[in-house]
Length: 233
Image (cartoon, rainbow, N blue to C red; front, top):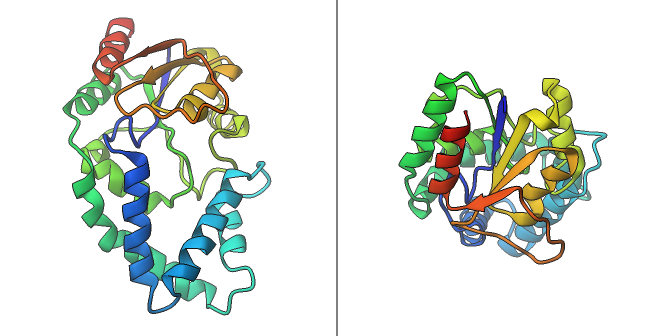
């Protein structure tokens, strides 16, 4: 194994994803309320997010988001995108209280960096890099080396599309059999196994929408995953 792909939310970053998204939408819609009323803003945001999830690899997720969010919109695109950026630089940081520390994440990333194993933050790229790096800071991951952090700026597909994982392999010129994908979502993360990656399902914050069961190569707690990798490498 030469590369480990880690999901972020609910894996390296302990949090209840559904609850976090509700808090995030409330905070963001309040920030944008003097431009767009929340009952209009939230559906527009969710529609644009869904468009990113359905992206099939021709344009970046950022381009898809902008096209869909501003479709039939009277608002100035450049101004509103700067408002989003201000939110992620300021108010977004207050959401840290809904996450928990994860000292084991620090331990395992420190170990993998010391062994020169390529580490990839394979978070669903529906957020800009500024938001993803902020969430990484909440558990002290910003000090480590990464081969790639997937974000809506650099990816052309989302989980659970296989194109998402294929782009990572193609962009880094790596073989799937050299990779381990670690995540807490059966449908979004374990699908990487269909390309030939080994997978580890972290069950601490397990997500299973039961639409398509995919059996992981390994499964267990975050601590058991940590032990497995440190014994393997």
